[in-house]
Amino acid sequence: MINNKIIVAITGASGSIYAKVLLDKLSQFKANEIQVGVVMSDNAKAVWQHELKNSDYNKYAFTFYNKHDFYAPFASGSAQYLRMIVCPCSMGTLGRIASGISDDLITRAADVILKERRKLILVVRDTPYSLIHLRNMQTVTEAGGIICPASPSFYSQPKNFTDLAATLVDRILDVCGLPVKTFRWNDTDMQTDE
Image: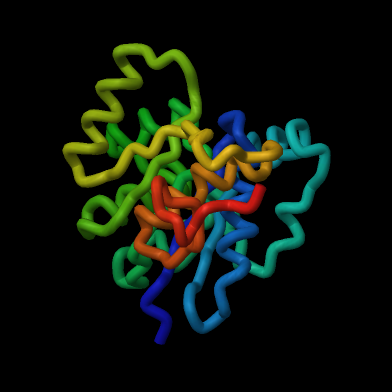
């Protein structure tokens, strides 16, 4: 039995590169190491096509669920999905999660993860934040969720957009408790090649 069941939700916020790099990195795990269920909003697909100029989300071997499929296993806590990553997370999705509005599979799954006291990671992607956004982030944090802003790091000196997005995705995987080989600050064993 796989105990690393992960939900990946992709919303229509800008930042499809983060979702792509996340799916790429999760694809590197063996099938017996993790089980990934993916749900994308319609806007997420449109933004991915606009920003990345492809529909490569169709090429991943994960199980994809329709955003209105309340028969998806992770619509219930009994399926024991332990982690959920919303990447990128729109402010609208954040607001619905913070308010407990389960009007689609993304928000229902987030509600389940929170009520079961499991790990919910929201990769919020917007700037600047309004007071409403900040209060919604506070509400989710107080409910046990983790706000992980889509703020990449630069100290590893990324060479391109994919490398830059990977600095954030590696941090997300760290927060999930998944093993990832990545740049670590002042760790001579992990220094990148020049």
